[in-house]
Length: 259
Image (cartoon, rainbow, N blue to C red; front, side):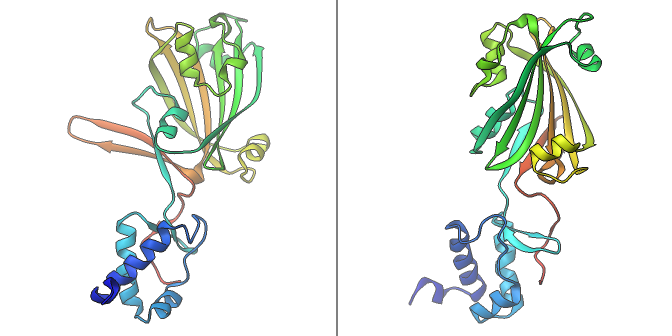
C-alpha cells in the first residue's frame, strides 16, 4: 500500500497539495484551481477538499484573497521598529532579496521641516540621497535620506553599503531614533518609481536618528505602498512590540471560500 492510500482522503489531498506548493507549481500571484475543479480532480466532495485547504492555511502555505481565489501564501518580512538596525539589513537577514538603486544625490539646503528634525542652523546644508528598494523583484520602498553635510559622507560610500554602517565608520553610530508613521497618496513621480497607480495609498515613515551624544545625524523618509505594508502592534502586560510587515501581497485575506 502507498502512504496516500493509508491516509484519510483530506490528509492525502493536503499532503499532495503541500508537495505541489513546495515545489513551486504555483507562483505567489498564480491562483490555485477553483475548489470545485480541485475537488473533482481528487474525486472528493468540496467539504473534504476544504478540510485539506484549512490545514494548508493553518500551516501558512496558502491564503485566500477576496474575489480572486486561493493563492500560495505571500512571503512576509518583519521590520521591528524598536530595533536600530537598518531596514535592508533586517530584511536581508530574513532571506529577502533586496536591490538598492541610488536614484540621485545632491548637496543642498534641506526643506524647513527636515532642517528642524536635524537641528540645523539656517542655510546649513545636507547630503540628500534618494534610493529605490526592490524586494523580491517588486518595487517596494522609495527612501529620501538627509545627512548633515559636515559629517562628510559621500554618495559613493552608500553603494552596496548600509547607511547606518557608513555613519558608524565616520564616528557617528546610531544610538536612538524617533519615528512617526503617516499615510499619504502617491504623486506622479512616486507612483511611476513604485509601479503603482497615481494616487495609490502609501505608508510613510519619518525617522530621525541620533548619535550617542544626542546629535541628529540622519533623517529618513521612507514611502511604502499600502498594498504590501502592514503596521503590527503586539501588546503585553509589560511589553510592546511594534513592527512593519512587508509582503508581496497583503490585501483582502479571508478564510478559504468557494470560487
